[in-house]
Length: 447
Image (spheres, rainbow, N blue to C red):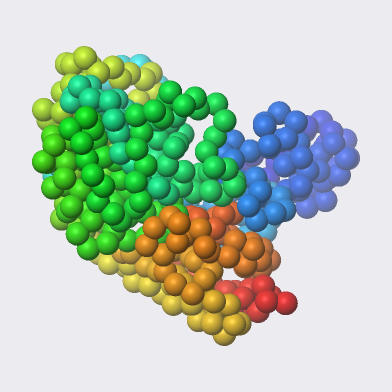
């Protein structure tokens, strides 16, 4: 039995029972519960990214069969308005024709070679053209790989060991950076993570977000989310990013912007263009792959050329700059214009307003701050400025609202510390339906 083109169970078992996608029984039950339960038998926790397990909000996850535009559909055929959008990676909408056409075309040429291809050069050029600080760009496979490579590069280029990061910033599953927490561990209720020895974080200094720390001459780099999008959405305080730039310059440390979420999501130049602060290195992910796995580090020529084969800082990867991800990334970036970002910003403001109105009408105290195209959600009486304040959000109310929205066919991230994302698929009709759903959900959450 299949839903669309995706097999979900033993075809022989399904055929013998004459089942359909909605009536599948026995060994071939096509339901969210059965498929999740089956997954737990081969995948730890049933998921390949911990937050997907719904631990923070309770219950079991829906299992996605397909997506189109602003919508996703689970294996039971239920459609949801999607406010996750692959955690910001999808801007054009699910299964956008430009992306799917690019993937079909490149798949016919071969999917991996372990050798240079024209598309990786073109994607690097596209990034460099749009982000002036990226004089050179190295492609890789994920945002985590990008942040870990940036730290290794900073240490190799400066000959220093220490790294400063900020409480609540999440820079992927890199041992040296997991000390800072952020949504990845906050959502799971973990103070850190087992398996990271003290030695791995011995040279990591964690500072409060939005406060310029003291930076010594033993610091290799300061790495920061220029807009914190892993503790909800928190804007940089006036002077914070400028202060980091000046402090790094005084001691010769490198300033690294983690723009895995904000890069090409806030605008063509990312957060660094919005706030007019030029970092030494920038980490990218998500958007530059058009929804496929990818990452990149870009930066000053003199720093980037410390990477092998020119320099002594090692980086390599068989699938780095692979044809599928670079084709999708090029297709996505070619669609992203100034007009697109103006529209996205308008829709982000509309989302914030409709959620605010829905909650206020139901008597729920909540804030939905907007930074450009990003929307945050806090269940409390003020908008936070750092992680300690963000953790005051009412996680129980978030869980109630989350499930109420899910019952109204709206999918949000299953954790209170993530951003909400809209894309080009969220047109006026979708936004109107979303407003109605949010209003009913807020009332339901208060019952």
